[in-house]
Image (cartoon, rainbow, N blue to C red):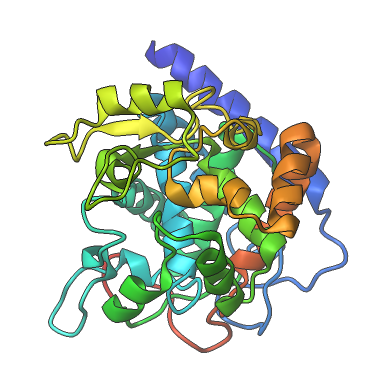
Length: 341
């Protein structure tokens, strides 16, 4: 088994490196040195300072996902939850300290976010290969891309050069991360506050084609509560199946796939399920049942055309990953992603 995993790791590492090289030849971009010399993101930021950065991230992720297939979705989600709070600056990775109140304790994150140990392993290997060069914020972005690709999703040209924050913001983490209970109007408003439009909302929601959700985020849809009936948009057979996993009493930490058709494959079946009333979270189904014509047309289009979804997902990931990055001399390059230098 170990030799098989080793061979697969080498193959995927080489294949991914080839694909990235084809995606952005080293010609038209300014080169970065990993030390904050440039005030914009560039796909070639580490070409000279740490050319093995992507390979190291990819290598660690192959091992992690073979060991725990859920890790792909967890790392993708970790990047989302970082970027929606004061920008893509790795603030979500900071632990509590004398001066830091960690975002890990925020309601959307507590006992929910995973993958911190994988990020630690990547950082340790990068510090050995290229000390003080690759930021934790860039590691999160690189890990999200590799996690998507290893699950069968698209590979995209990734601008790099983010630096790490020296602060965290628990209040903002509680206030800025979209809730699984949001209706479509609130979802659109939340994304627009971040500079993301309806197209980004629908495409990025498609990241739920992999991963799991806890019953605590679903139960309100399954049972009559305080005079409110179960969610009328849930397909009956799916409703009964979810009730068997998420009982009315207890079982809050039981999990169900966000996309039960192909839970480990990054594809467009998430959108097909929504069309049939089989979106797991209320915020998933709201994309179709919320009666927003622009959003509904995108759901339909992505359900019918996987290539279209993949193309837009890649564009929206780059757009989200470019939200308020720390650049130049701002922030720092943490030696340990869990604490400031």
